[in-house]
Structures are given as C-alpha cells and as structure tokens.
Amino acid sequence: MSESRGGFQLGTVGALSLSVVSSVSIVICNKALISSLGFNFATTLTSWHLLVTFCSLHVALQMKFFEHKPFERKAVLGFGILNGISIGLLNLSLGFNSVGFYQMTKLAIIPCTVFLETVYFKKKFSRSIQSSLAVLLIGVGIATVTDLQLNALGSFLSFLAVVTTCVAQIMTNTIQKKFKVSSTQLLYQSSPIQAATLLISGPFLDKLLTNQNVFAFKYTSQVVMFIILSCLISVSVNFSTFLVIGKTSPVTYQVLGHLKTCLVLAFGYILLHDPFSWRNILGILIALMGMILYSYYCTREGQKKAVEVAPLSQVMGDESDPLIKLENGSKVST
Image (cartoon, rainbow, N blue to C red; front, side):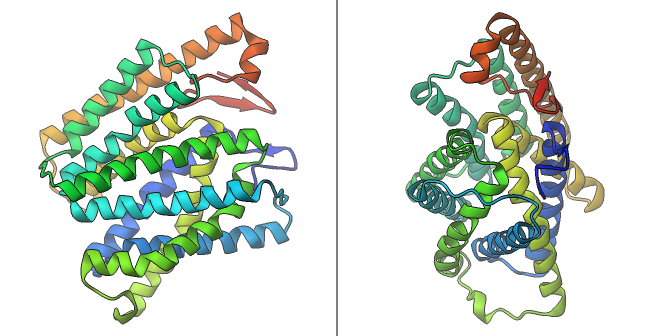
C-alpha cells in the first residue's frame, strides 16, 4: 500500500501496471454485476468503493505503512467535493446520452486538459506530442464511437463532466507537488469527502437514471459477493489513479485510460465473446500506435531537456512524462 517503505519504491512502471490490471479487473467485475445481475446503481457503488478505500487506508495508517500529513483543509475539501461531482456528472452524462456520445465525452478530456494546462500553467506541448495524441484519439474513436445522438441536456452535462474531470485530475497532480504529499496521503484525506458527496447524491442520481431504488433492490448472496469484490478491487484502482497522476501527469493518465479501454474491448471479445469487428481491431491498432508515439516523443523530449537544462527541469517540470519510465531510488532514468 505504501509508496516507500524499507527502501522499496513503487516506480512509474509499477504504478502504470497496477492501474491497468486493477482497472480492467474492476470493469469486468462491474460488467458482470450490472449486466448479469441487474445492479445498475453505478454512483452509489462508487461511493461504497471510496468508503472501503478510506477504511483500507486507515488500517494501513494504523499499521504504519504511511504517515498522515495534514495540509490545507480548504484545498482537501474543495478537491474531494470536485472529484465527487465529476464522478456524478460522468454517470449522468452516460445516462442522458447515447453510448457513442459518452465515448466522445471521454475523448474530449485529453484536449481539454492540454488546453487548461497550456493556458493556466503555461505548459508546452510540442507538435510531435500533439500529433501522437491526435493519432491516439482517432484510434479510440474508431474503436469505440458508434452512434452519436445529441440532445441539449446531455450535451450540457457532458461539458460539465469534461471540465470538472480535467480540473480534478490537474488538481491531483498540483496538490501533491505543492504540499509535498504522497498519493496515499492525498487519497486518505480526500476519499471520505468524495464518499460523503456520492453517498448523499448517489441514491437520487441512480433513481433518476434507472427509475429504481437502491435500497429496495434484492441483494442475493451472489450480488453481495460481486459488490464486495468490486469494492476490494477499487482500493487498487483509486490508489493507482492518484499514484499515476502524481508520478506522471493528467494527460499521461488519460492516455493510459484509453489503453485500458482497448484492453477491455479485447478482453470482452476473448473472455466474454462480445461482438467484435475489423473496425474495432483497426481502431485499437491505431490507438496503440498513438500511445507508442506519445511515449517515444515524451521520452525523447525528456532526455533533451535533461541535457540542456537539468537544474531547471527539476524545479519547473514540463509535460515530458513518458507513459513508461524507470525509477532508481530518488532519481528518474528515462
């Protein structure tokens, strides 16, 4: 659970691997829970995920796996509420839009993040990195976007979901660096606020979207077992999300997220025999090419900056975090 204990560090490769494995696992688990068992209360389920995550981290704190480091309470409160709101808006966006438009909403997060970081943080994204991101988005779009049905309310909710998600992920990175807190410490302090936000709003949102009451649902032993499994996996998902954004950047985390989408499509075809076409295969291959190019250009630019302005790069830190890089102690070798 800890990032550093007894000389051990979970490096960037480990964080990326943990994020991919846990995210794909929870998607498969939740798909069985929702599609097969009829438990359609996504927002309430997410609140339980965060509650279990907080309890797990509290146990880890008592076992001294990490140290509690309080920092500005207003920042934690705002960050936790914003994260909870972004999750709720994403679920509402899925409920009021077609699946194809929801996928377009998720694709819009990367260019929105690039825009916000360029305007407000003066980060520079080279043409090579912008081109690789464009290739990635085109590939994921070909693989996932099918029908595009627009409506005013759904479009407005999608816009709010994109903006709040981008800001929340940028805050995840900036708060860790500004207050010098680890991903574990930030998650420990913010998860109860996120959980409370979704515990209050979740049942109302789920009833609005499904016309069902989460408290009136028939909880069989199989449903309870899958809910428990989903909550346990979510601990790794939430931890790895904060860890990856803290070690790399919000844009790199979104690139990794689209890799997960491609893997979920592939696993769905192999394990669950979901419908699959040559369009899906072509889109996944193009997306993978975009990810490889993104990692290559980030690595190359990182090496160039290390040679030219090594002291300055340690302080400023531009958008040059590759999708995969290796750590050795406190130094990063790309």
